[in-house]
Image 1: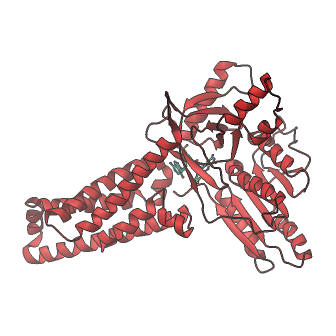
Image 2: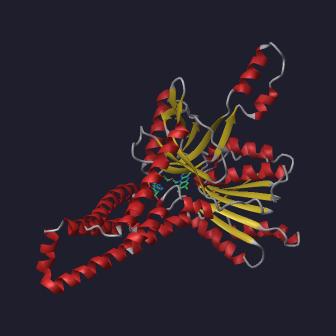
Image 3: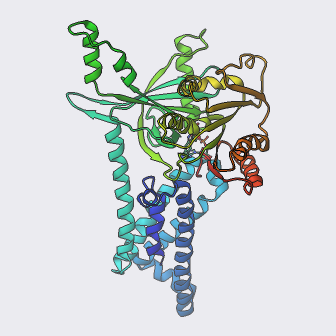
Length: 466
Ligand SMILES: Cc1cc2nc3c(=O)[nH]c(=O)nc-3n(C[C@H](O)[C@H](O)[C@H](O)COP(=O)(O)OP(=O)(O)OC[C@H]3O[C@@H](n4cnc5c(N)ncnc54)[C@H](O)[C@@H]3O)c2cc1C
């Protein structure tokens, strides 16, 4: 049974979850299944070893157990797999996993290697029929790794007369904001969809680590607007520019906002900050720095579509703003073409200080521009740690409302539901939250209170699966 269950165990752990894509179940859920499948495999293996040990002790005491293991590679490999499995379970315990995620990841992969070698040889030496299940699990793992390598190659390397790689432009946001903006112009096409995230590799910072980040925004050059704005005069320099624009392949730039944590993101921030300050120590608005970087993706939470909701409330905390921006842009564009039901969109963003708006201010302006005619979008910014030095300039657009302190989710939700009720309760409300756990808990609690009053769908992006 343990060898059979290795198959779902491996299927559930993959970044490219082929089954997940087919059935529209998000990665977080598969990750949960992966953990439980792992526990089941471990319990079954320990039961298998326990049964053999009891039998052996019964037959020839504990000394017989030692003799059997010493004299047989078959038993040694079985024991190696069991020990690796024990460490896999122990090192995956939540407090250890959360304390040092990278150490967890490295030891997890090492233990998996020992477990697979042990389990395979254990079955192979005695020609056990279970070997085929281990082979399938290894095959799934190897295939998915290959798929990932091919994806990285396809998205980041361009072969032609010469060959070139991606490089990321890393910009540090103004001092005290603790976030960097990373922009990567892709060598190959990238069809941006809301809810996508991608893994970022920056070899200068680490050759082994890759970290997931939501794609906050995407821009394409030349844009359709740029092409249309070029006059169509024959034999002039502008017509040459027009031809160049028409013939040049559109290039997509994807943008991330990455807040500083302790590991990779901390180093990224420090590198960008150092580079910026060495360029011009006097300058506050900081120069970009280029790194070689690779992107793996896109990965997407297939389950989320907000197209059929008439009212939408997006709540974001800190860098969680990266998640709703793409959805809001999509809804505004699609709404102008009559393709979605959205009539009212509210973004409530909780930030530490008002200058954090600079992370995304140009994208907010773009949203206002898209919404100019319809006036569907409202933005509320909640500043939890107002600081007089920074928080004097609370701009951000004509329809941004500023508040000091944390949002009262019950009040916001009541405000969203009132017009829906006035329309005869026909519209459904989508509530999506992306931010720290405490913020998500507050939003969930407020939704639960009102879930009987209207059609509300709650969804959450936690930026973690560890
Ligand atoms: C789908 C998704 C989208 C995300 N989008 C954004 C975003 O747009 N902006 C942003 O600032 N952050 C985002 N994050 C969070 C970001 O991935 C982590 O903050 C980052 O990996 C931390 O790296 P670190 O080495 O500095 O972390 P550490 O300080 O070492 O660890 C902090 C925590 O980050 C998590 N973490 C660390 N490494 C990884 C990893 N390789 N994979 C998954 N989680 C990890 C762990 O929970 C860990 O406890 C996203 C996370 C996910 C899962």
